[in-house]
Image (cartoon, rainbow, N blue to C red):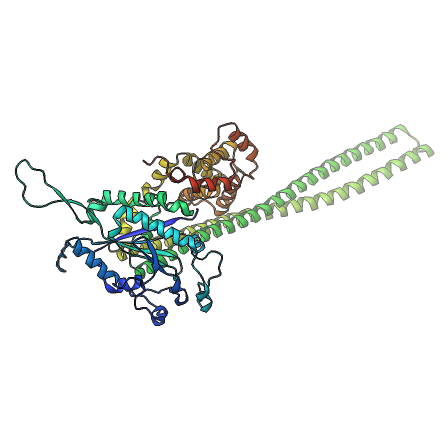
Length: 577
């Protein structure tokens, strides 16, 4: 996927001095920058040598950080007093949200490029060389556009803090906004009069009163930011929440940094367990196939030898039969010779000697063929016995193979069970129930994607059929055409569309335990189609030129440049109003 923007908004019921100081780096010396933990107890990634790059925006002007003498949390309280807000008791169960805490950023590489350009920055082990780094103008323009967007949306007077941090791993913005909206006045009204409204601090008046309204507000917030700011800097809109996996949904939820790190670690372990389980099954299938192939090759070799031995035996039997017939014929001729010559004369003796010599020759040949016949019969019996033993051995191998595969599947199921247990642990860890809600909505993911991108359904079906076929060596023309249509109508780059299709198909691969080798071969074919170098590309190109395609043969670089500039039309999901 392309470089995406990120926009996180968290409602706050309070904003203390520690949070304020962390945002403004107020009172931070080198000791504080070097501490291994931040105020919440999580590992930090602050760089003392890049602190001079940080800045803030105050009343539409870029100023160095800490240009405001009054701390952030005090400015927040001052503005609340101006708005006539009265704090609830600390023990109250209905304390309202008084602040919207934003963190705005995006793709790490893109933000670094905007902030530092081509300068070499040591992010892993910061040193004094980083103090020579200068701030690029593009990051200031992006920050200013973001500030103007927020000022127009929430009112500049309600933006309490706007700090841009360039001293951490990824450049980002911290912005604090007081939610101010129109609410209905309380109290009695005279008969016939309408109840009036007033402008006051109200989170619900800004984002909505119900969960559905709040969800829609956040969805529109991302879209609005992309259309007015993000697209100008090559930052795509983030993925719609309904399109995320359950793990991704959970990761998108707000949680403190320490819990987030633990959560990511557990998710990483789950993914490793999945890969290990899949590798076990694949290895078992591979070993089984090798053993089976070896046994089949040996059996075929023996069958060939049996056939040769039977042919040789048949030939020897025929030759022996012919020799015996010739011997009988010769003996008959000798008897006829004796009847013909009553007296033994010289002619008789000569013919008789010739016949006896031939008879001796036939008897010698018969004896030789009989011996060879016995040897051939013994060899055939030996081969047949070996074949019988090998058949029995193959049955044992098949049983062993079944045991190997069953064992691998059992281990796969055990791993899945362990994964399920980890999910339960994550559910327990997630006290606010974010994972439970994510799990509830995960089944709607494919439906949402196919509603926006209907061509993807046929493409995913084609990909699955290709990977699941034992005989297919490549896509059929129709299957390749389905994939090309989906890639051409995706609205994103061709390589990203191909990866998205493969991601959708993985669910079917996992459910049906498709061999990884077949999956890999199919994935390679999909990528070849996306790159325009598949064997069926001439056919697909002809289809596209004929008006039936979806832009399958466009110049990718030009398309991506157009996507960056067209704004709304380039990112608006299909089927979503």
